[in-house]
Image (cartoon, rainbow, N blue to C red):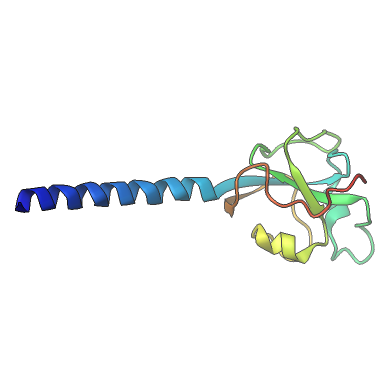
Length: 129
């Protein structure tokens, strides 16, 4: 009886450890961030700087993000499909992704261990802009 108990306990522990590892992989991902217009065309990051003393920002600029975005896309490039966006001055969304709550975010910034699955995330502005 004792060897059967040890075998079942070992099996349970292995299954529990595997389940925990699987959950970790589903919940955290790396996300790339870019300042872009409503169509996903990358613009100078100054347009998404809400601390720029009136020199940047405006209603038509967003922070786009996706696990599929890599660093290095130049200004003028249309971001690959599958990303989400939120207003550049949305402090709650910035914090959710581990970004500073205000100020400039460099194009191509990659944050590791972002909660959520890549590409989906939160989009603070899904209406047609």
